[in-house]
Image 1 (cartoon, rainbow over the protein chains, first blue to last red):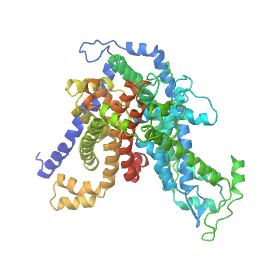
Image 2 (cartoon, each protein chain N blue to C red; image 1 turned 90 degrees about the vertical axis):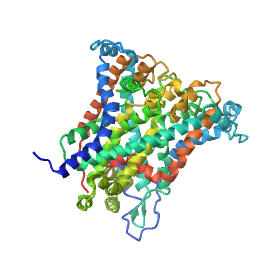
Image 3 (tube, rainbow over the protein chains, first blue to last red; image 1 turned 60 degrees about the horizontal axis):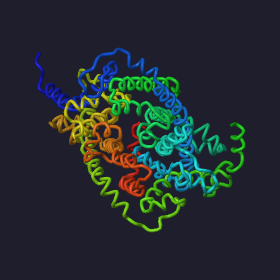
Image 4 (spheres, chains in turn yellow, brown; image 1 turned 180 degrees about the vertical axis):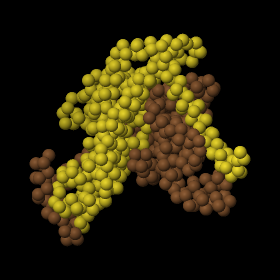
Length: 308
Length: 302
C-alpha cells in the first residue's frame, strides 16, 4: 500500500511533537510510579543495588506500625474538618463579596470594597507552604511572646501551647491550612456565582427573599457544582499537608507523632532511614487512600445539574 | 432554618422597584456584621505578614521582652544584611528564578505541543497517550519518592539543576496537557484549515496560528505552573540534598534557616529572610492579581 505524502507528513508531525514530552513524562513520572509498586515488595535500602524481594512483608510491618495508624487517623480527622470549615468560611465570604451588598439601583451587588477583599484573601495562596510554615513558627510560639499569645494576652488569656500541646497541635496546623486556603475558594466560588445570571438573584430578591433564603435556597444550589470541585481539592489536600507539617510542627510530626501525616513518614522513612522499600509500601497505601476518597466522592456527590 | 428564613424575608426590603429604590437600603444588622467579618479576616491575613516585616527591624529584646506587639524602636537594616550574607537568600532566589523560568518555558512548549496533537489529530493510540498523561493528575507525588530518587541518581542528575528542571517539567505535564487539550478543542477548525490549504505546514500552523489563538489558555497555565513550581518544596529537598547547598531553592533555604537555628536563633534575620522571600511575590501578585486568580482557579472552573 502506498502512503501518500501528506499522510506521511502528518504522521511525521505527530511523532515529532509527541516524542519529547512523552519520553520525558515516561522516564521521570510514569516509570518511577510503576517502580514504586515493585520497590514496595523489596527490602531495598537507599541507593544500594542489593535488595531482595520480601513479598508483602513491608505491608505486614506497616499494618502493625502505630505511627502509620496515627497518620491515617490524622488524615481522616483532617478530611472531616478541613473541607467543611474551609468551604463554609469561603462560601460565607464569597456570598458577602458578590451578593451581600443589598440592592443598588435595582441591582444586587457585593459589599463595598469587595475587590479589595478578594485580593487580600487570596494572597496567602501565592506564598509557598514552606514559607507559610516558617512564618507561623514565630506567630505560634508557645510563650507569651508568640504573636498570637501576645494578642490573646491583651484580653487576659494565658499563653496557649499551639504547637507543643499534643491535643491541639494538629488542629493548629489545620487552622494554618485554612488560613492559607480560604482565599482560593473565595475566588473559586465567586467565579461560580458570577456565572449565574444576575436576574436569578434579582428575581428572588424582588419576590422578597431575604439573605438567608437567597443564600441557602438560591445561591448554594446554583454553585453546588463548584462546591463539589472545592470538596475534591480539599479532600486531596487533606492527604498531603507535607510541607506544613515538615516546616511548622515540633520535631517534624510531633509532639509524639501527634501531627504526623503519611507523606511525612514516607519522606522520613526514605531519606532519614533510607528504607526505600518500606517507604514505597507507605506510598502505595497512600495512593489507595486517595483513590478511594476520589471514587467515593464522585459517587456520593453526583447530583442533578441545574440548568440556567 | 425555615424560621430564620421567614423572619429575615419579611422586613428590610419590600419588593425593590427598579430605579426607584434608594441607593443603599439597609437598616438591618447584616450589613455592619458582614463588614466586621470581612475586616477580621483581612486582619488575620495581613497581620502575620506585617508582623514578620516589622520583626526584621526589631532587636531580640524587642521581640521577646514582653512587648512583641509594639513597633520597632529604630528601623535598622542590619538584620537584612545578615540574612543576605549568611543565609544566601540572594543565591536561592536566583536559583529559583532560573529553574522556574526554564522549566516553565519547557513545560509550556512541550505541554502545548502534546496537547495540540492529542486534541486535534486522529491517530492510533491517541486515546491511550492522552489517558496516560491525564492519569498522572490523580497520583500523589509521594508514591514515587524513593524510585524517583533512584531514577535521577542513576542518570547522574542528582543534585543538579538539570535534574530538577526535567522532573519539574515531567510533573507539570499532566495538568498542562489536560487543560490545554481541552482548550485547543474549543478553537474553531476553519482558521487552521484555511492556513493548511494556503500551503502552511503543520508545524507552522501550530506556532503561527494556533498558539496565538490559544493565548488566554496559555497565559493561565503559565501562571499556574510558575506559581506551582516556585512553591515546590518536596521535590527540591529530595533532588537537591544537603551537600549541594549552593544549588538550593528558596523554599528549601528558608525552611533550613529556621531548623538549623534554635531558640538562640537570630529571629530578626529570619524575619528579614522571610520578608525577602515574600516581598517579590507580593509585588508580582499585586501587578498580576487578576491573571493570577484566573490562572490558579482555571482548572476548577473549566
